[in-house]
Image 1: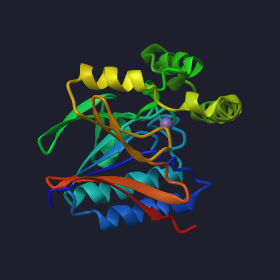
Image 2: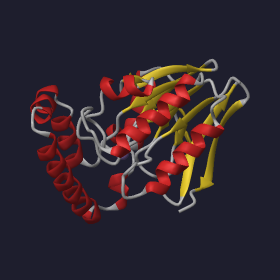
Image 3: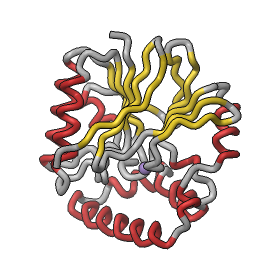
Image 4: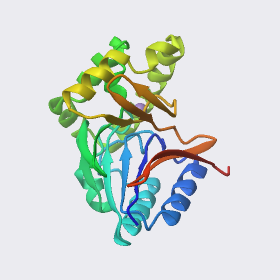
Length: 238
Ligand code: MN
């Protein structure tokens, strides 16, 4: 069937097994789609493609089974799993997507992003993003032993939680001017992203902006076909 699906922000974590089960159910139901795009933050944290945790093995196997059945799979990293690389993608039968990526979605040029780069009002975060996206910085981190990276990840998460609780909520959303700028720059009339946990369909000046939701009480996905694009949610059984 000519259907393209998009999900993001599952924040998979060993301490929230219901979300992993919900992904397994989703993949089983959607195995006849043409392609699936995961637009960042599939995992709550990523220590490196050498992570030997049971969760990583389980999700890699699940995605491998899905792609072996036919659908193509593209994975973009988010601000949580920014270290995810080609090693994991190969195990999953996926290709690693750059952020941003432009695709032809049934004749409509569509920009795909995680969405964190659009939150330009959060200057602290943008400085942090530049640091962690630096290939040198990443290489240095990946040279540390896995156990040390596990400690660092826990530290970063605690710090991010503290910082976010202090910020005004409007800082955490995308900047309208940046959305316009990116859409015009890439010559698209449609944008699909996640990150902000504000699932919606917006009519921006440059075109349509679709926002995916985080998988918490509900799971979210966007479905596109030659007939159109739509946003869907379903309950996650805890
Ligand atoms: Mn994110």
